[in-house]
Image (cartoon, rainbow, N blue to C red; front, side, top):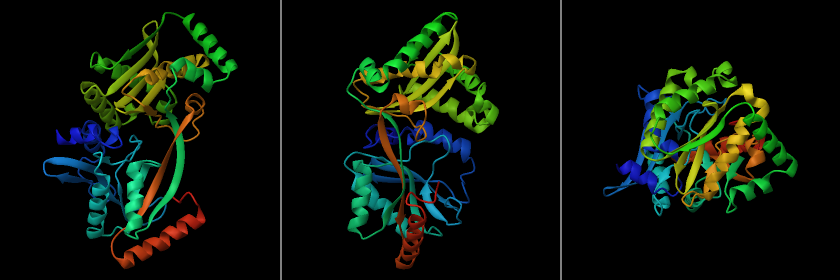
Length: 355
């Protein structure tokens, strides 16, 4: 498939825009082909038979709390990264094609908005450079940092440098006390074996905790449950899923799903049994997750966590800058309006009005 080939050769990997994840997401959240009053479009760039770029777009009626129609990357609550899939070496060609198309197909959109973009990366810098060359405003309207795992250290050395001696001693104590409760086992899998039962166990475990009470667990809505099941099944079939399980007497008490997209990876979902919270099973599982540092094909792992996450920020010492970018499109009048709106936004709040 050309789409999967593009994803595997992308300058910046993004599992959420690979076909095995994006197609189930569209089926779940956009079954009629419409989102926020506008159809989701897969903007693609091809050279001959080779697909060199792809980005899902839609026209949003609101920008934060403001009624400002704009064209934006289509992402949802369970997509944690917004970088387009662009084949390495075709970054400028992709951005030029996207901006040219956005200029000619503005409709009611006042500007183009790209959320959850990786900053300080060649892919994004190519966009800023092109906009500057065209005298086109491309504004960073929000910037944040989230935990990233990226190091040449061995897992045990990394943990030693990330945590104080007191905290490491506490983790060893919690592990020992948890092992006294029964037979404590850890399992890691990258195959399709038992993927269905594993998904069932994860969904039950997640629902048993605070997410179930809040109605935000994946199983709380048929759309998110379908996305979770289908995407994990497809990812496992492609060798792009890593599953971690900490079990007590064969009962899972902490589970984790990582998406493997060499040279990077993404933490997708984690769940733990709150009845064992005093033993920190989620942190103990994260300790096992540091084995990613030993993988030759994986250079980094994006936590996909909120900034200042109390648990992951204490374990992973690197940070990944993520931002929202707004770009002028269309003719002079439209761009003049956008420049005014952008100036107002950044004057009121240097990190933007979208949060």
